[in-house]
Length: 259
Ligand code: ADP
Ligand code: 5GP
Image (cartoon, rainbow, N blue to C red; front, side):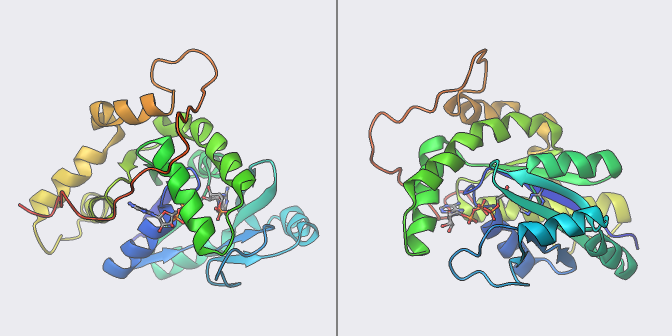
């Protein structure tokens, strides 16, 4: 059975890695492509687990040798790339493959493989995103405000690309977003490979369909407005009237699995 290629993108701090790690606990058969990066490890990250860490020189050499399926310079800073080998190995094994890549890399992959399933994860609003970026920094031992704001300012630009993606998740309540991501994977397996969904199949297909970009207009309106994108003509301005962090929720208040 042919494996499905999933691309997942999100502004940094939206919760993409958290969602992917939850998905992999709950759904078998999804390989994760470990990217190469020139950025230094963060917190407890390990070479060969989250990323393959390398130098700019080595990355350039690999690039010249055609090692990468796609690559990008993210935040005008470090380089990131997916090795072709990841895709070849997943294909040979017939496994699904998940690429966690930025909007530039996603565009490169879509151009080569239009059949890829693309998913864009949005944070609910800029203040929640700032809270998550700060919390993550705190958990890693130091809050680098400059880095937090650099990533925050890049967020609106990245969110502008949401129209290029087939599915959109708003990662507000974690359990709900995980259930939606799981539903997308199971629904795509069902439609593309005829794979049977073991439980609550109709509900799973409905949850996935609601996440299609074409069905997400109303759901996305407040998010786009909060990021100054919807209906905006000029440069976006992220406005924080007060400096307190937003309450963030990991509580499952509205579980789509509850019939
Ligand atoms: P990304 O991979 O998109 O950069 P992370 O997965 O590292 O983001 O998440 C950033 C921070 O936000 C982490 O501290 C994570 O625990 C937290 N987080 C992720 N999703 C949620 C959520 N739905 N509610 C609250 N906190 C979340
Ligand atoms: P971080 O430094 O927070 O881990 O990742 C920063 C950004 O780089 C995220 O948007 C992430 O998706 C992206 N990224 C990670 N690996 C790759 C990759 O292999 N290629 C591309 N194009 N982007 C990547």
